[in-house]
Image (cartoon, rainbow, N blue to C red; front, side, top):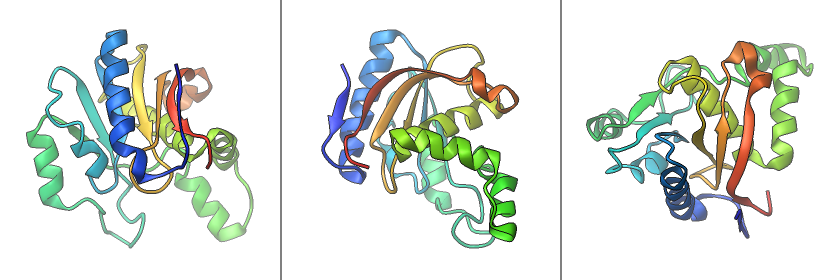
Length: 184
């Protein structure tokens, strides 16, 4: 049964994490990928050491050149708690975003991102971070995972999906929507 939040955003973070972890256990899934730029959402996953939890942050320079948004103490606390933290280029941005900024065009990865946004920003983010974690080797290939994404701050969307490596992106399969906002 899908849960629909009445609003998007951080207000749904605790509920989204709870539903995601419950569904992982119901399905016997061992891998959870959570988008978390500052570490807030990922910190709600601490203490679930029976699961392989991967936190995917914004890339360095996302807000300010050379800056990583998650402070070192938070990263250390997550890693000490068994959560793997990945900071890397966004799957659906990267060079396409540079082309858009420079030449004001629309490029394939941004078309894909905007198509996923038809289901909400959190859906796009969840699909993206699962692919990034797979490409980094932090989750196994060929298995279903739980992926969490959000609309700005916190997480408000959780999916069961089978991610594919970036070069095989269209083999990604969204299997369940655990929760998402009705309004986005």
